[in-house]
Length: 303
Ligand code: NAD
Ligand code: KPL
Image (tube, rainbow, N blue to C red; front, side):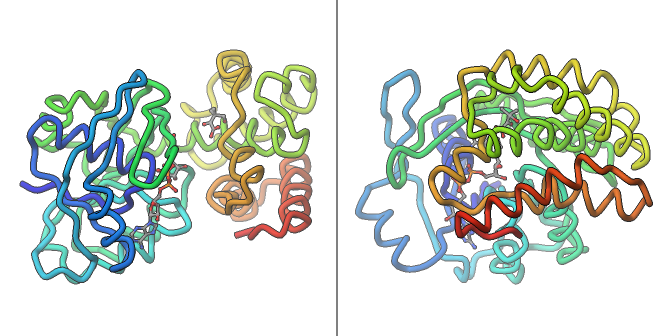
């Protein structure tokens, strides 16, 4: 069964090249004719691992190609997920499976609501990759990919493909807990790194601010029916701050490079959930207001 990969960015390219390297059939779906021509000129996708580049001539096509899609890896940013899924909706075979590889929460529900006849699996990834140039990807950090389906705990047989491709993965019977936990970590760390304009490690100099946010996020997770995701959140946040001390968070990198952030699917989602549950979280609310102001001052979208 062919793996269609929509979104030839960092993670999409990282998955596509490893699947292709394992001899599995892969097709890229590129946004428009211009991107397709640029890709064909490049000759394929290049994976750079441990400094070694290797090019893979993975076939590519447009969203409106006429072959059916049975398995789709949707590897775009959270704010693009719904429209990207819509662009190939007519090609999805009945019972097709989608792997939604987005950070935060909210975009997965948007896609699943649009495609009620398809199986949507959610993926939470801690692998690291970036693009030094178009159609090139650097595998920058080993990590884990948790996959799960909130409405069906049975793992799909094709997890074997990931095994064969060397894509580290675990089937998670409670993927929402994983995604909530990652969202909480990102909400406790990423906005502060933007507002203090610092690397993750420098947040150790703001222990009270981090602790207060973790307490509020823990309360939110409890109220949202996610007690497992709330467990030892503060300790975990401190561990991640120490383990990634030299790094700039993804949100810091986005702002520094003038790119749209995924704020609506992180802090925005958390704030909306707090409102829905009638929980008053003043520090989280203030953090969101400060971040929105900061983005506006930098001419960046706040959704
Ligand atoms: P990216 O910006 O590098 O890649 C996204 C790609 O999707 C881009 O090439 C974009 O052009 C393409 N795209 C968007 N809409 C499209 C459409 N309609 N049709 C065709 N292509 C379309 O993003 P990324 O870094 O790979 O991140 C993807 C998700 O994974 C994000 O939610 C991110 O937070 C998450 N994530 C990324 C990393 C990482 O190291 N890069 C790690 C963990 C999680
Ligand atoms: O996931 C991250 C990010 O930068 O997006 C970490 C490193 C955990 C910081 O929140």
